[in-house]
Length: 340
Ligand SMILES: [Zn+2]
Image (tube, rainbow, N blue to C red; front, side, top):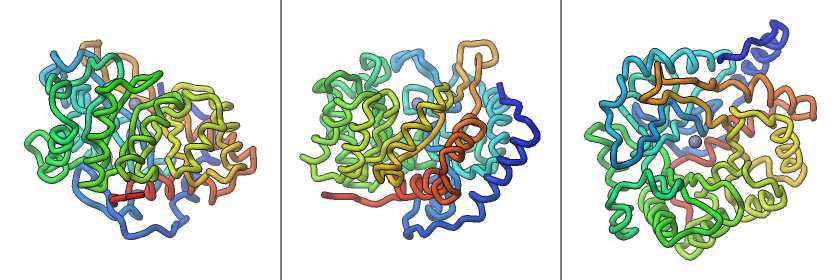
């Protein structure tokens, strides 16, 4: 599945990667939690903010770690992580939440063997008719859910010392259900107590703005909110509107094609002054327990082999690329409470 590139293109990309590494953006003193501990955000380097290593769609009532063998998963995923080194990538966020296959011991194995910083999450995934929510998510209050997530931030996940680097929630459209409104309130409360950024699997604009309204009621700044899967919304004026409020716009499905649409959208948002709000990633991967050798796997390279060259053709500079892949991820995810 790893793209074969021509020598000249590879050479060009290596130059791009070298450029990414040599540029030192000015960043504040904030930090982020990787699965091996805290690092300053200036050490994140070129970052993919939304990828997956393993996802198990069996459902919250049946999921258990015995459904996969960590060594076999590492064997499958590691070459795809190693393939990122020519592109200068230093940090990858694993966006698989609890009850969908989050396995922090697996992430520790992958970070040690790949040399990449890996970042994991806390929070619950409400989309797909709540199939991935544990029973207590239906009955507990937002405060009780937030206290579970805060506990992972303070003490570690699943009996380990691994701490989350962001909050990952997920909602269904077209409008937020009361249950999903509660997940957003729980994420807001967790943000106010931990300073972790909220990534919400959202898609179209209506639920994105409904979530921003809830955050506003709770005095949480839009700068603490990542509109995840914003590429599902095709009306770019709505991306601009959310960016104007301060929200992060995550165009994170580059693993699945439509590179020209991404390039045009990013160029349009740049023209309107919102390059500083855009996050890019593939949403690619992933090992699927229950399938032979984890099934098909999509690598994490389209962004570098297809999208960046398209952006270069549109006149994007080295500084723009750094903004997208180095500065924005660091500014979006540095731990810090952001109130209105
Ligand atoms: Zn995802």
